[in-house]
Image (cartoon, rainbow, N blue to C red; front, side, top):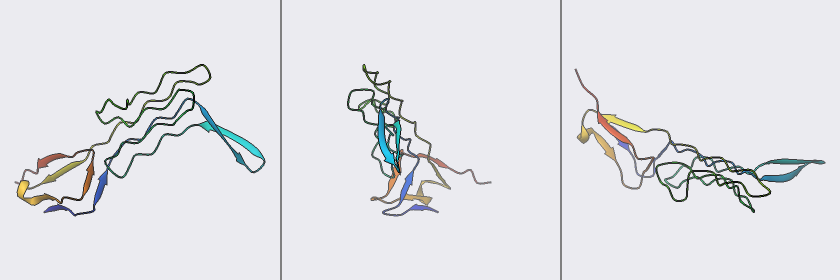
Length: 122
């Protein structure tokens, strides 16, 4: 029996792409400048956003087959490089002896949507 309980989270989501711009922070007495990070893969069905830039060059959203917002990084602007593309999703496969032995409770999160299958029993 395979049971996914209410409130359970099974996630294999990609992250957002890095932005082409730099964000600077102070680390002690040093200024550290890095590309604007995209979000990590979310533990929900929400897509991860790309790194955000003020003047263009945003990173692409997580690529899970949805085209808006785009998984592609934004073209460069005069003062920034182009943003990176959003990460693709992993795969979740839920297999059980048959459909009656596979229960996914409402209120659980399985993202991206799972591939369902039956195990061949000898």
